[in-house]
Every structure is written in structure tokens, then in C-alpha cells.
Image (cartoon, rainbow, N blue to C red; front, side, top):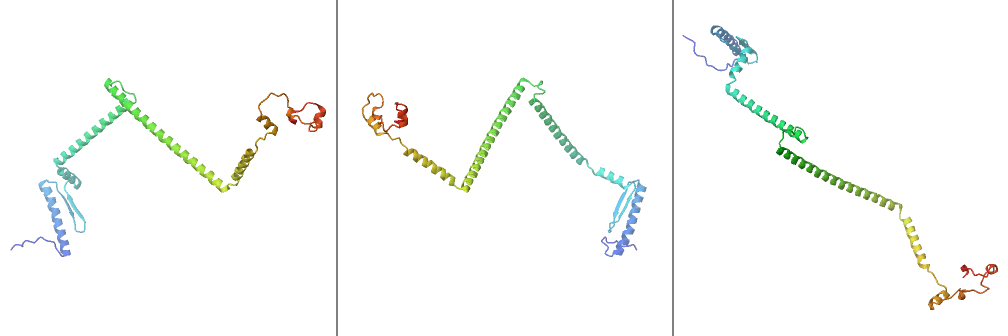
Length: 244
């Protein structure tokens, strides 16, 4: 009577589970060895126990067998995708390289170099480009100069305003006494000038009121002998002008 079929499920008893693992592991390794020898096959077997312990068998070496496995799993479809990506990157690099060379050539032309291969039309376009760039540069320079001048003007005005405020505060702190004295002196000088009018002698006013006549000498202004100072009359009979 044969043995019945064993139900495949996890063994709950820990000891029985460990014993079963050891027996079947050894049998599996033995079968792998027999398969590699009998059939001349390249066999690789990797086993990890429940505790994480590694058991392995490789008929031709584990590393060699794994490399061969990776090469076989690398399908031609993936290779085609990789080739297309590589080709796309190559085309992108070629475009960037051509653009870089074109920019370098344009820069040399702007600097006045390598102008021999250019035609008349290309030289005219280059001339227009340079004129436009020069005009824009001049406009920008003028704008910057105007802005700087405006900034300097505002700064100078602020500086003058600060100086004016400082002087005003200083004058207010010292007091307005000296200025009042100066103002009073000015008013007194004006009053003296207004009162210091020229007064005419009565005889002069009378002479000015009559009609003008030709007269020689000063008969009406001749003083009496008593009015003439002795020092003057004794020295000369000429009447000095300052005595009149």
C-alpha cells in the first residue's frame, strides 16, 4: 500500500519545519548537481532560509551564470529603444554644435574678422546690424547720462536743503538779538538821512525868488566890518569865500 499524497502547506511545527527544510534542501542541491552532470547543463541554484542564511550551487560559477542570465533577459526590443534614444541624443548634440559654430562665426564677423567669404548682400546686412546696435548703444548711453544728471541734481538740491535747515536751526538757537540791533541801526540811519535836509539862507531864497540879474561880486552878502574876524581883516582886504 503506497503512501498518500502530502498536502502542500506551511508546517506549523518549527522543529518539523526545520528538519523538512534541511532534507529537501540537500535533495534539491543533489538533483541540481545530477542535472548538470547528466545533461551537461549549466545550473545555478540559490536558496535563502527563513533565517536569511544563503545556500547556493553553480555548475559553471554563480557570477558567470548570472551574467549570462542578464544577457539573455536583455531583449532586442529594449536594445532598439536604447539605440533610438542614443541616436536622438546624438542628433541633439549635432544641432547644438552647429549652432555654437554659427554663433562663433557671427561673433568673428561682428569683430571684423573672416569677412572674405561673405557676399555683398551679407556685408550689407552686417553693416545694418552694426548700425542698429550702435544706435541702440548710443540711446542707452544717453538715457543713462540723463538719469545720472537728474540724480545728481536731486542730490545737490537735498544737500542744499540740509545746509539751509542747519543754518536756520543754528540761527534760531543763537537768537535774533544781533539781527534786531542791525535792523535798528538801519532804521536810525534812514531817519537821520530823511531829517538832514539842506536849508537855504533867507537871502539865498530871496535871490532865487527874484528875476535873475547879472551881478558882479556879492554886494548883498558883504558883512559889516564888525562881523569880519580880526585875523582875516588885518591880513588882507579880500573876503574869503568860506566866511560868507
